[in-house]
Length: 276
Image (cartoon, rainbow, N blue to C red; front, side, top):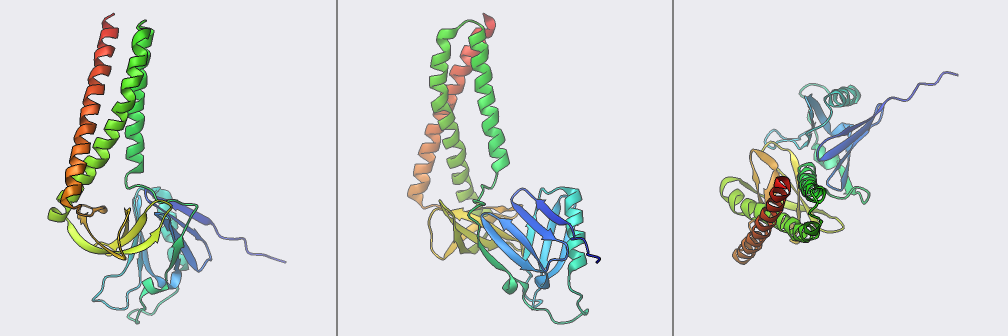
């Protein structure tokens, strides 16, 4: 008895999403921001891989409305090419010029508790935290090796509020910057509520190219007005009310003060230790 060996099961991981497809299957699985979408191949018009990017374009019933696009960036170029070729080879054959259905209506989605929503810049944020911790640890080590043990404890006590100040300044400063700049210079759209995570609400919106994105907001209704950066459509923000803007600015300034004071004290003690 002869059996046909199963086709490859491909996993394509990008910076914000993961796609899975098994050769011979009738659908692909798209995981993004704590949401799992089941995309039937009957809903897919085209799959394109360019370098480390992949776009899955759904069918559109009307030429007046752009099709929905699932886009991924930062994937492996080799896996992206293989993924695109494998899915394309399994797409149903269609008669050129034949009417299409709306592919977005065939897609089903549900929350994935095992995949919590991630931030918009998880890798960059992790690298920044690692760099700050490494700098403080190196400074403490140099001071300790130089023999100034009595200074190490004050350094540690100062560096804790310094780290908190850096976090406040970066997070609130960026939120205030985006909240004021994007409504004036970005593209404003209405986002639809998609699902809850264990800590926030997640909204979905579509940019002018038909690519779907997600935005996290702690509170809101079924629809949310937000503005995104046309150069980076995944970066979006709502406009905070004036009292919230004032509070964010004050806390960010306090964070900057803590950061500046802590860095000055750390650098001063480091220079003194190096001088002997």
